[in-house]
Length: 417
DNA sequence: TGACGTCAAGATCCG
DNA sequence: CGGATCTTGACGTCA
Image (cartoon, rainbow, N blue to C red; front, side, top):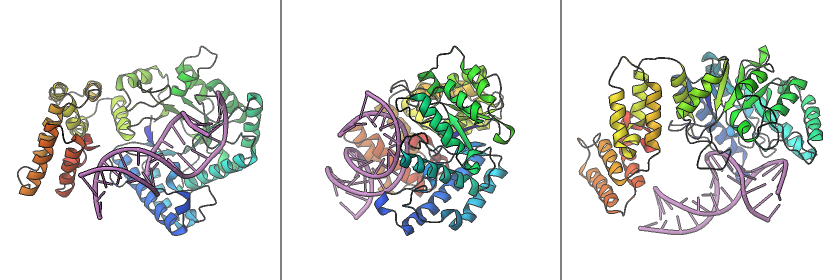
């Protein structure tokens, strides 16, 4: 089972994607952006390898205006070496990558211009994966599209447009249920008729439940039959609801116990799970460590190193509890650990906690900081205490020092995010 | 015509 | 002038 995340990372240096608006999309600028984004992708892939993350969705923004006539750069040719090098790293690591054109790529529209742009977009996504030299198990995920007042007709248009696509595209295409129009029963029907693998999305399904009493596990089992040998193992999307937001909004982080329960309900373990969640790679690491059986506790200690000041500033009691939890080096209390971190992060930052955490972080510099830096730190700390400064300003100052003095322990801390 | 979702670019404000 | 914060862009569908 591979567990992964979508498009971008949190807290990993040199992985930021860049873009531009249409009026600034000159050839030179586009080339520079593409070079930058490929380099960012390579850093993401390397991060994934280091963290044993073997599933990743590549951002559609990799090539700005990749499917638009605005971009005339022959990027597949000009950057062939970069693609090949990155692709080799992906293959050598046994990583599975995918892409997801999103809600604005619609091949069943009655509007011809919309459809032709959608086809261009699919072609673009296909070219990216082809350039990487990855096989047909590296997929492009698509929704069915709109309804236009006549669902049967809209489905018929989807099927016709799909069949007319080049084989090169079809071999990578998979379809997913959405939360507005096409439930899993309908998508599965289309997938079976046309031989398209179906991705089950649990949160979309929870919002748009079909007229059926089948359980999640049963739907997943049913979707499984649509995945052939060349398609690789079945893939699903997993998301949790943000309790504070409208239905369908992705949670900030994957709540570990809820995920474990879901994981236990799935009959088969030979499937891949793409997480859709705000904290991206953080939840991917969490879910991987939580489901791969006992490991050396150093993995948890490394996680704790990243989370600890974040926990400290929000909940000192939880901080103390986690320290105690990780004392016994023979055990691997992964679920308790993440559960406690989640509890802590539900709290607001209070003044005392913010000051306490900042003082801990300052401890990395206090021995050798210059007088000026000392004054800078104390000034921001006092302003925070008096209510005229912000936690953000104080943290930012500490971050600057961490970068300047190359404090790697701090540089990888989630405290600064 | 605006909401929807997503992210960074671009624009503007502030000290 | 730099950094913080607000607005726009790019896409298609639907009310």
